Amino acid sequence: MGSLLRADWLRIRRRWDVWIIVLGIPAMALLSYITGAISTGGPQIQTSGDVPPDFQAQMAAQDAAMRAFAALPYQFPRSIATMVEGATMWLILGAAFLAASMLGSEFTWGTIRNVVLFRPDRRGYLSARLAWLIGLVLATFVAVVALGTIAPVLVRVDPGNQSALTDASNMGLFPPGPTASVGLTGALLVAASLLCVALAGMALAGLAALKLRSTASGILCAGIYAIVEGIAAALLMSRATGDLRYVPQLALTTRLAGLVGDAQAAAGLSAGGGGQTGSPGWVALPPLVGAAIVAVWLLGLLGLWFVVLRRADIDE
Amino acid sequence: MDAAIEARGLVRHFGPVPAVDGISLHVPRGSVYGFLGPNGSGKTTTIRLLLGLLRPERGSITLLGGSPHDASCLAQVGAVVERPAFYPYLSAHENLRLFATLAGMPSAVGSAAADRVLGVVGLSAVAGRKVGGFSTGMKQRLAVALALLREPTLVILDEPTNGLDPAGVVGVRDLIGELARSGRTIFLSTHVLTEVEQLCDRVAVLQRGRLVAEGLTRELLERGQRLAIAFDTGEEAAKAARVLADAGLAADAADDRENTLLVAPDRLGSSSINRLLAGHDLYPAELVLRRASLESVFLELTDGV
Image 1 (cartoon, rainbow over the protein chains, first blue to last red):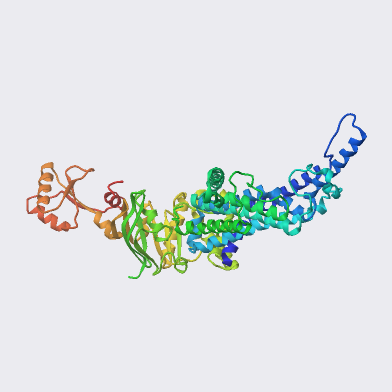
Image 2: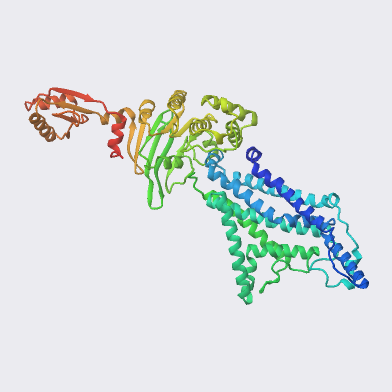
């Protein structure tokens, strides 16, 4: 296994696309965070013309409350969740691209043939490749989490008057979301749920790339699958009755949305459920059951990698 | 003799088409074995089956006494299969070092082995250049270098001179000769029949997934030789053809010369044929044994495909 990992390192260290993803995603997340943090400094409520003094005072109080609310995502530890949420789409795309590219390009270039001739143990080869992929996705994720940890120090956002958030006169002023601070565990839980989404993207795109023996086809096929499955699950959810209501809850996209929603609810970032909880026909599953279904999906998809490669004819 | 490659009854279809249809091979250790066949005859598929890249639907394969899926067995095999395949963003040396690492060689050993084989194929000067910028010929030479990286005892070469310039062809041919002299077994699939004629001591000819001939190159060439019997007149030639036919010998008219018959001398020797004709008052003006080229034997065996 050691030689397989070392051989992969010789490959990976020279691939600029890998490093663009691993370094670029945290950079994009930081940029997105800074942009959001800077925008909280401006006035939240603007008035024009002559405004009566008592109304002005009321508006100022509401503005203070709104500023305090807008500053919440940029306070540690919630900044971690904010940073990861800002990078989620890039993380999913990056993880999917890494998997599809690192597996599909072996077939495109025909190098899989040399690999198999020099290392006929296909399971070992794929295990090393999977270890690297998970390592790269984790490194990117950890970098994003680390940036979320230090970002409040780098970009200071005035928390404002936090007591205004709980002022009864401001009830109904804020969009749905927490008005209290989020704990470290909660923030990490949300970040971890988003990591699961990225890993699922990696597993799905990797499987498609292995099956179709192409990077581009792998990414395209995984994307189409996710969209079609999401639509089919939503359609079924809106129509199914009785025990059939649980069937769409088993779909990968539905379960990932549920996982993120459950994590957000547990962290206090949302009232509960999250994701598609508003969809007609949504059935709430116990969070642990939901997480277990996601785990089964992940293990199943990764297990299929090995089945596909083990049975594959190498005619490149 | 102990076999380097032993294959029995290999069958492999692609869709309904049989790419390999019941091929059996016995390649003795230390031999240079030519594997011939027209395009699409199943040569590359057979090589992929031998190397364990494809799985046969039927049949068995033994490489150097082991299975082609066994790492220790494949460690003694070097192969060039069809077009060369390398990581374009790595240099020639890095590509070789990567596969040496994959094969479990320590870093220093792998690096030294890469240097050695790059020298053998004449690519030392460009060892640090990215393979993406290599010409087809350079990639082909690098593929040969990769095949030699583990100092194999069995070398399987599928069209190793493809894309090479004349100097490159001569270089690879010399290299094959050198490998053969060092006692390695060479399994050479090629379209260049002069290569086979010069290098190979045994030959197999493939046609539509089946073996149509197999044996010593010398014997195959003997099978293709013809006795050219020239007469002074057309009447004599026609009468001689009837006499030979009665004796069970097929005589064809030569395309390149009038009043001349071509006879396969395998059943009767040339002196017996001469005696037979003389017994019927037929005296050839000339009787010459025409040696066959591998090309003519190949075309005859493969119906000129």
